[in-house]
Length: 334
Image 1: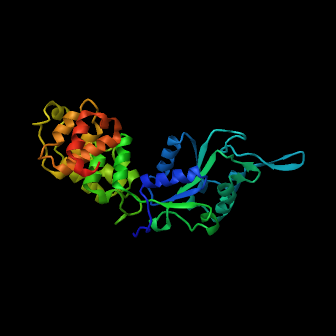
Image 2: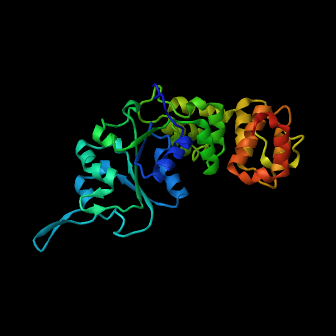
Image 3: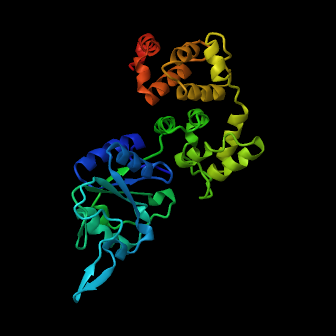
């Protein structure tokens, strides 16, 4: 499947979305299923301290946007829908029209005014309510329908793609089992793939996050559990990776960083690098750096460990171990 010429990672897309939000320009985040579009808006809402109102227009009717009618003194009125912030509310919020590519033309028309002007008939959202959307693209073999030009022109458009580095950084920030980012470093092409997919189970960032809950299942179940999430092909490669792991424990490494065993297999080194980066603290970072600096660990794995650890916990950059490591590796332009 060919990518659009201009696509963003989730991380770089978030920067664009924040700018558009600051300028009050509605934006549509588009991309394949499972790459983190909804999660991106959740992160923006959390970062900007805004409430997030998630609307699934595909499950709504036009009357759900305007509110039910009632008659008062012979006059028909539209009652304000429950999902709308109260009149006069000063609380900033983000209204996310999720899965917007799945809605009918009737619902597209009903959403025009709400998205562009922040109004639904007589109801105003208020200046503190930012409108945005997320959806799949038709080329992703999702349930997307053609969006009318009238609706499309109401948005700024940002297309996203899966990105191993952004996913690994997200895993480290969200306590996803380190065996998952280790595998993705080992086989980055399997982060997202629809090759041979039966349109049910195939690898996506969302699916791999769920696999993390199955990695420590009994070996007799693990392959079938993982296959149910990412498909048989990706599950087979993940099972080979898991069976080939030969990892020393963190306690073993910290007890004797200069002599603790170092695995030879690249798959084990990827997993070990991910584990060390995840569990690095200000107290044990010196021991971890001492271990990964050994020549048999390999400079690439050493670098990944140090950088992933400091991205997850920026306070590690204040340690003596980091300063000495960064000075020794100044050719990396850190």
